[in-house]
Length: 273
Image (tube, rainbow, N blue to C red; front, side):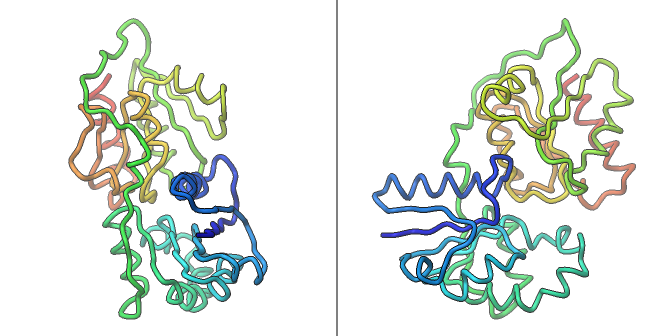
């Protein structure tokens, strides 16, 4: 089978693109011929037996639904109500086009049950079938005992990702400012050996997100045996598994006030420090 994956950008820091690569690799290992693209001609779209679309809100993705066959669209939290309100007037303006194209898909693919609900709410009664795929299958997530945190130096806390308003970084910086014995490092772009050095330095990854249905960096941290603090802005991690005590999942963060978010992060950090 010939499978074409389309994403607006394939940068290493792009979570949607990295999830697409994991799925593409799995499909290739199953014997399919898989290719990646940002834009595709009608000829290339028609030649593919399946077309996978990642993310949303862009004309290059709409084009793929018009000409692709057996379209599977994986929107990566684009229809989280929090994100729909961010630059909401732009999304309202092009919303009819987005919904028209989404409804042409054979299947919509969510990374958790919460995202499935967001998609169905956004599209209403004419929503195509929505499947939930388990992205955690690509990672070896531990349930074993943890090593003790170091006591002879400050606790090394890492934020790894884009500095975007929906990532909650301002709340994290405000929380850490009032806690002794904690050192926060914010890293936006790190790859290869540089990224591994960042992970080696890190004791705890913090992703205080307001909208991040999966949060690929959480899986990367847990796979390396790191502790993680995240929020109900990443609902894929709210299933009750704390991965051997490594995961602190903060509920009530997304709907909290700015002050409440800071306090919730303080309480989570103090559990470790």
